[in-house]
Length: 409
RNA sequence: CGGGGCGUAGCGUAGUUUGGUUUAGCGCGUCUGCUUUGGGAGCAGAAGGUCGGUGGUUCAAAUCCACUCGCCCCGACCA
Image (tube, rainbow, N blue to C red; front, side, top):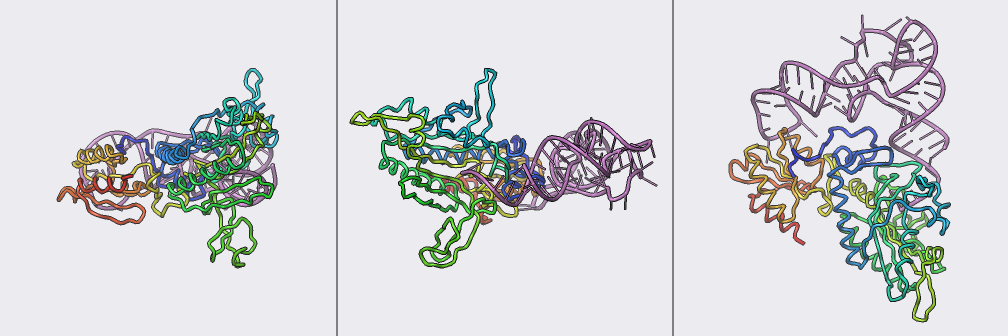
């Protein structure tokens, strides 16, 4: 992508509406723009990151045997009446009527709808287990939107739902998802903590939360410095009896055993070998996709701007072209890299060198290559690693093969 | 929804306390021309504002009053 032709517009100063680091940087670097409080549009840079996050999610969900579908954002209110959650979620739901007076809502979540879909197609124990997922926009009428994408009225979530014949089956499905989640969060480049909720004595609500430590966190976790374990309450460490240290965490993922709550309420039933009608034993598994984007931005930046982990970065490389005479060569290098699946933002704008350097740091692609004097004199480029500022000289060929190796696999 | 703060050009702001030298100023960005290109560049020109909105007070309102809309932060609530 040529910078001069891209829809990338950075700002020297952060908009006043932003308070936290991630929000400031995402706005300033041109990843997001605010439409209204709690409502954001993803600009091309932000959308590329979002798609990379989604790609990682899809990879591991598919690997775990989950199948992607796409439910509706617009939902009839009557499916919610079956579970009574039309009342529970009344304050948070955007509800309205169409011109035929049909009562609708913008889905705040999709347990009801997936259960309706499952009961329409799954009739036999032979069709189980089954796990479905989607990456969908959710709508919640937040009383107080906050921290940009962190808490917004419209946000993107990956939600998966498993259907099993019994608790043993659910345990297996759940375990698979847990494994997938660990891989997903690792690939996000996030230093995450899995917080385990109490598994109720009733065999009920097993759940795990995927948390990342961040200043804008809305949950408090308590860490034992000795055992390096995290707990949800302030009590002293159950293992070593030492004092716990509190810190703020953001919840990015949540896996949860639902049991038969929805299948019973909505008659999600199947026949077993004996001809008995039994309710699906369900699990649900969420990742706040747009929140992940914010969380990465929040925990990975420096004074100069964002620092994207390789797997989610908008581009793999920013190629700064300082002299117009190198423009063609630069685009050639970019073409070769693109052919290898390495994405390049070629900054060939007619701007002062400092502008290009600063924008490259602000946008935060993992590698920054500079084509300038050294290229004129002896065909060499400087390649800088955004995260640690290490810089090395390469020829065009060695740069290409170096990046090829870096991005192999 | 309680508490606090803020709305002046695309972004950041001065001016508001004490109404009038304000045809509302500045920085960045934008446009035109020339120069410049290894660290937010120089010179010369230019465009862009119903001072969030409505109503009021006044000879006179960005400035005072009332209402209203919007945004941010703290809390409650939540992924």
